[in-house]
Amino acid sequence: MNKKLTILLAGCLLISSIFTGCSKKAAKDETNCYISLEQAKNAAKKQKKPVLVMITQEEGEQNGGSQYFVEHILLNKKFSEYCEKNYIQYRLDFSTKNIQKSAINESASEEEQLAAREYADYLQQGFQFARYLGVSYTPAFYILTKDGYYVAEVEYTEDNLNVELFTEILTDYLKQVDYIESLVKATSRGTTEERLAAIDSLYTVTPTGGKFILSDFAHKAVKLDPENKSGLVGKYYFIIADEKASQLYSEQDEAGAIQAYIDAAESGKMEPVYVQQCYYMAAWILEARSSMDSNQLVEYLEKAYNAAPDSEYAENILESIEYYKTQFKSELMESNE
Image (cartoon, rainbow, N blue to C red; front, side, top):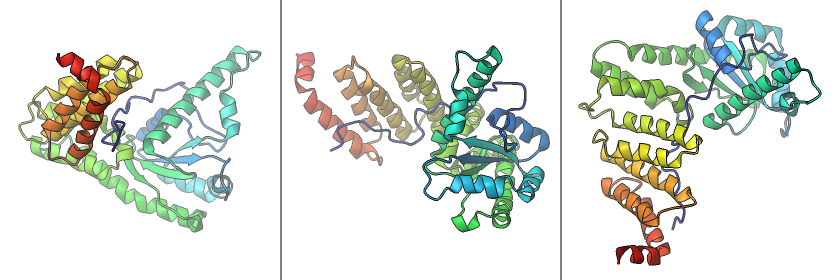
């Protein structure tokens, strides 16, 4: 039996608004790659090119893949010329030598301390971005549209890590870039139904790790059909509630985060499975509180189960209800007397 509540859906409690510019001057590393995602996206918009995200770390690699990539591909003249024509390069290098750049030395000048703080900001943004993408190895490569929307993770093998083959792989992904950009355009054209269909398609083709970038489209869907007459918008109400709750949760306002889910669950604008997820997430947050109300926890779980008893999550929720009723038996009995 599952004794602890676990997140039902990957992607819950994610903060989408994590990227802010730290400096007006171009922030690039020694390989001439942007280290600021916002600056890379700005350059991509101006030059109308997709963004190639490169995640590297020299330490902890048995085959030295990142170091090999940097030395034999990234610094290769032909590769640089290829990217100059086709991509904006954004590199997240988590090697120790770069992490050390974020250390603030008290004896350093004010300008040097400012540079260290800015670099720390870039690293923090990079860490969060990599975490959301679910990066588990390096080197890892991802492609974003010129507006920063997720296109794909670049699939490669060690044999592909040479300039000729790697550029061929990247060229093949340009077709997927065009497809994602066509869906983005379609969300602003045609009838309400056609726009909603484009938004649905965009969410469908974007893997879980890249969905957090699509927040604007959830808000657009709700504006297109505020009463969910189409029956297609419930999931976007949930996404918006999750976004609001995650922001409050990050600010340590657990009560506010719980209420965000409850308000959405009681809005009458979501299908049962999303109502279920909202009540479950409220219970998940409540369980972690030091002053947890056992009666409230069980009530949220029961509401979650009753909302969609035939869902794929119902059995898990029912097990949690039985477990907590056993754990809190004396407290529940006292409250009912």
